Image (cartoon, rainbow, N blue to C red; front, top):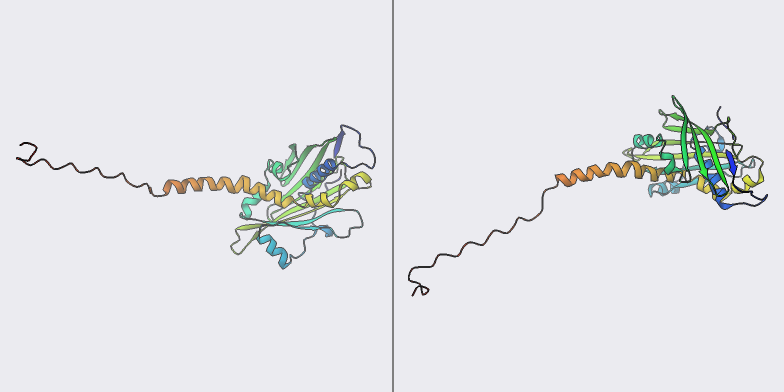
Length: 264
């Protein structure tokens, strides 16, 4: 099992009971970074069947968020969905790129691969906050057969929250199967710290569940647009030349006839 704890280097003291909105946003976005892959067996984050209204929103390119409902244990998280106009294999390849984290998690300042063995990866994520530097060590497991990535905070390192885990699951979508449905589930256990609990509020939870939309932006920017450029260039080169030909020169005037008035 991989899990548990973020190192924090305080730059200035945070008074007890005082919440910094910037700090809360950083904590949640960092926690979202670790929520990139965890045991989807957690009942609270298990996807439920999408309703007709939700499916229509997905077809319009919108994100669907389902926060945890009435969780009395104080857990934060939920499930979210989005459809990407790219084939499954292309999205799967994009997810496995380490630089992709910088786009999917805009608040990540530094990321480093610590371990890579088989399907398992361990990454170190650093975020510079206004009053602290947050360091998250996240264990990832890639399941190519299921097109799923599970993640959990590495229990060998301390973090500001007690635990965090989640998953990203991809599935072919649409009649032609040329689109991808992204399902993201994540749960954070803030522990007993009242300040951390206060920071992980509804707005922070909503930002965390926005991960599928950030992934979509990354795929569009790093996969779809670059792929379209050579196609557009090839089409332009193969297109027939529609430039009109130059006008034909005017014919020379006929020679003057002998005995014309010019010679008389």
